[in-house]
Length: 168
Image (cartoon, rainbow, N blue to C red):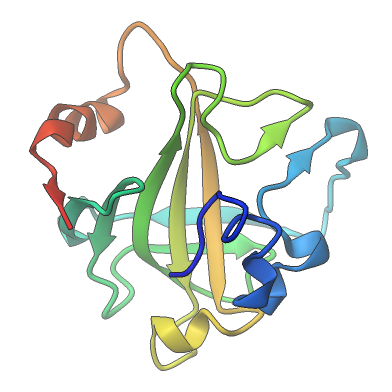
């Protein structure tokens, strides 16, 4: 994908290849809790992830990425504002050179050590490449990561395998 964080391919340029990324839909965003309002019409979130669906873990030069089998509804996200079931395609991480600067998004002026993105696509479209061009085609669940003394069991396996990741 022709994007990055530098001037010529950074956030200010993303909308040129991805028009939906312009304006309020632009990432990264700063979340201000004083401006957030609860929407009672939203359904609860539901996620069902099958670790056995992971096909590959690799280093693509920008991040650690895990790719999943998304040929059927094996690992899915639904609820909230989503119009239906979305299939998990991949997850990847954002991190920085220090524990206070690695997340892509900001909450109340605070950056976190890292951020995990779980990228899902709407299977009402024929495939991921078709879905990515649609306004309701992609759903990304972002989870902020903090540094702790002991890694959570869910993260421990990935952290143990980091050195063995293949470079693409």
